[in-house]
Length: 277
Image (cartoon, rainbow, N blue to C red):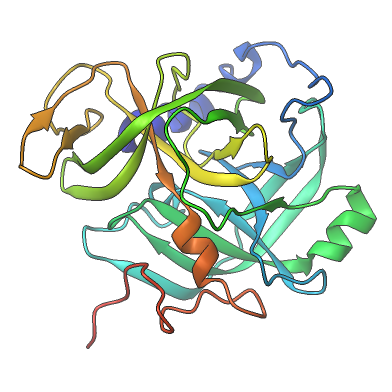
């Protein structure tokens, strides 16, 4: 996850030359997933997303990983809601070649690394305003849990490159250092994600809907350590898959987005909640 994906991205920024060494840009052909709605963060990737009840006049949302927060990675059990933020995002054109403009957040709507690994930012502009100014529409979050064998695309705004593969299966529990995630998406080996891809949307290539958010991979074959997540089944049996990448499902997030684009943690929402004080 985490330091592998996030740390590598930070190193690229400070090195000042690795971004230029990214693979050449390639325009998507008809039927492929392109870079519409994709953004680049200073250390990660992300996307403009909307839920089933989102309206054009709502303040737009940007989704990335919890471990991509500008304030640092949330602790296990920590849930952040309604925290002010002025973070900016580079909005890419459809081909991923050029930056159309900068978007700015007003607050962190929701962020956690407990059960999942997600951050949702609320912007200071609406979906309609973004579309009118830049010709860019948001990606739609799927309400359905994905299935094994689904063909997926992972467009990274940070690298301006897309990985494609299939969902190989799901990890009942996935552990990395002190964090535990539930029902994680496991990729087939073609999605050999690298540092900076953290927070990229996982897009179902058939429906073009977002079914998850990319977040980690096992680098060295170690067992449940930082940069080396392991899978734990219902019986507690641990499996290590070196070189395999993972993401977190987002249908639970989609189901928690109410009118006004608020993440409501009541009314049956199954996302983790902040600890009561």
